[in-house]
Image (cartoon, rainbow, N blue to C red; front, side):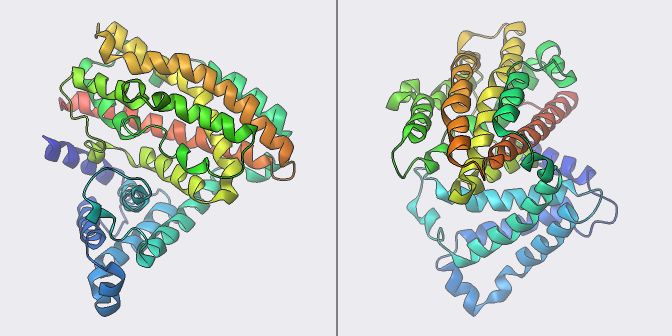
Length: 371
């Protein structure tokens, strides 16, 4: 079944390709599998120094994918998917997965760093081109954040929201859980990467948010545990990344974006602006999922994560705005516009990901696929 689902995802990406593309989705799949072999190779950098040709297929695919994704219109869904999956496979090495220690043998590889930087440079330039950065730089930061958060706390019901609340089937709900588990089962992990450093009120509030996500250090109260319980109600695989092949590239892009912003402290303000949006807007999205679960007559365990987040993220959103974003704007007046940039970028990417998830759920329902 997993193989069929993966092929569906590949086929969807293939449909989105422009006619003039040079590589097919299956070509990119083959290059990705070659990259996985490189990741697992002992002493990768030394091996490449002796036999650089072992990376030729990967190098060629990356070069073509960057052109197809970021330099032509319409861009290629298959190319986006390939690049975001490659980036994620590198970025995930920043977290510990309680697996075979040999999987981390290349975590400090110069070659992997070069690949990551190469993709990120083209991708981030493309992402920024989708926003009016000059206009954002001219705005009153405190007013902009206050106005945006008021709107996003309770947005009007969109067509996709109505579909989730009123039409999505139980099979669609399971498919939604499978995709959402990509983030839900490791929730808060990237936030942990910005907490070290000087002690102050902002740092303490961020730590407080993380501790609530982590259930105060109790596994039974950790938010990811509630997500796993929802999946267990349907007999689904609760291992992190079990449904990786179902995840749209738009969702992967959100994860990779947050890896980048937490990796580089120069983007500290932008990350916290994005996290402010994420926490403010979360309850509205979770209400859609909760309404769907209630309409379907699911058990409390099959929807408990949404109920928890609606309650806690309403509080987290206000914490992030009042106790993190606004104090940072006051502390860094010349760079405070980056908070708004981070907010707007997270919203843009989040909306894009949410739309992609709904498209995937609809296609899965129409084709009769189950997870």
